Length: 296
Image 1 (cartoon, helix red, strand yellow):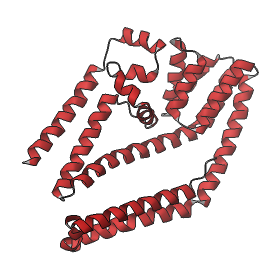
Image 2 (cartoon, one colour):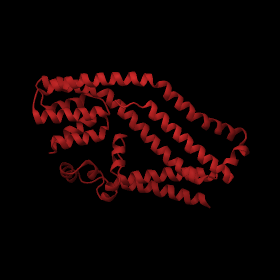
Image 3 (cartoon, rainbow, N blue to C red):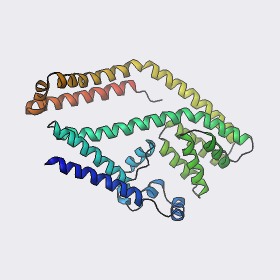
Image 4 (spheres, rainbow, N blue to C red):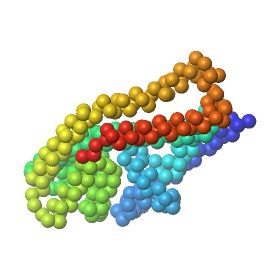
């Protein structure tokens, strides 16, 4: 009886996501006029501003992960993952665990996407800065240099610098445009670039020379960061192994002796023990991550 309800909920969430996606396409001229005077989040959530104000961190997280969902679409995707996880949990008689697992899987997928995108932008940033400095030395203006980097560079950094140039072309001041860029990048290197450009705009100086010095600073910082990751690789590997061992043993028991394992799921005392073990395992993962993560 529950499966038709889940299937209907799944289809409803998918239809809501599709409808929100179609409804978000507005007249281009009106969107350009709004874009020049409103922030990126406000432009994305026209008609659902209340949700946008309630979830600014979630919107920034989606931007950094390279996902172009509106808040309504994000809620629909959350509903789909939760329903699928709930369906699997009902099949295993652990609906709450299945629902939580579905949401956790979505979060982990987005977090991994954000980490990969951030890493690619960090690797591309020094070359992009040097290309911009070379363009300025060749007689290009700052905005023309940004457009050159956006054309010649690779994703995901080049489109972001292109959006910076577009923001300025549509009337946004440099500070506002750089704050948007920094929020979309979500990296310390992006913050350094924004700070250098703002200081140069306020105090003056040779921008190409400033960019060259910034390029060398970021290169040195990334080299130190690589050395730190090498020294902490063993700790990270230990954390991964210790996390996967309980999962692997649980899957092995589920395949070899399902009745033995299901006691932890069906019996109330087993559920309590499973919950305590899960909390302890998550605490261990958090502590290992704190130990091996060194912020530069």
